[in-house]
Amino acid sequence: MSAASDLEACIAAGGVAVFPSDTVYGLACDPESAAAVERMYALKGRPPGKPSAVMFFDAGLAAAALPELGERTRALMARLLPGGVTLVLPNPRGRYPLAGGEALGLRVPDVPLLSGVGRPVLQSSANAAGAPDARRLEEVPEAIREGADLVIVAGELPGTPSTVIDLRTYEATLDWAIVRDGAVSARTIAEAARAASRRVPGQSS
Image (tube, rainbow, N blue to C red):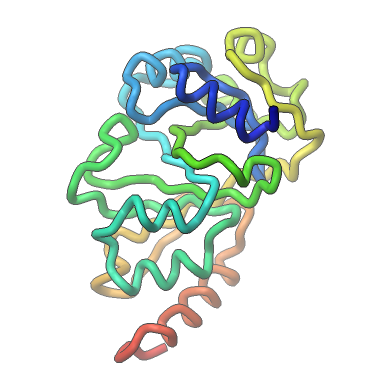
């Protein structure tokens, strides 16, 4: 079996997996399983109810899962994904309620090893809450590695977590804000936003 099929099987069975993203090692579980989410949070000591991002391994699947997103937002997503960003999007229909509430964190990493994964996961970094992110598998706490149902090894990763970008008002105003600096620079995001606005009919750059 491939790493992608192993991860899909683990998530489908309600398991928790340690996996490589394009930034740091992460934890993944079924975003619609309360038991799996509770177990993942307990493994890393994350406070219950604290939002986590939903991750897709294909940008097209991510866009299809959120059909209510507007044209402006989709144009910018197409410029940024896949890549080392987490997008905070409006969530008026309350999709993936275990991930958060009126806002939804969305992540699509550039990980060829897992490009065949066809289902979303709820993800968080594979570290103890508040501790440094894991660039190498041995930096993932032993308790997390032993408690997970699957561990996917991919060597050393870049080590800088994703840049978190607030796009909740972007559709109406074209405004965006960086919530957390990370793997993708503000300059790169600004260039993507300018290019995306030129692709939307009737919008200025």
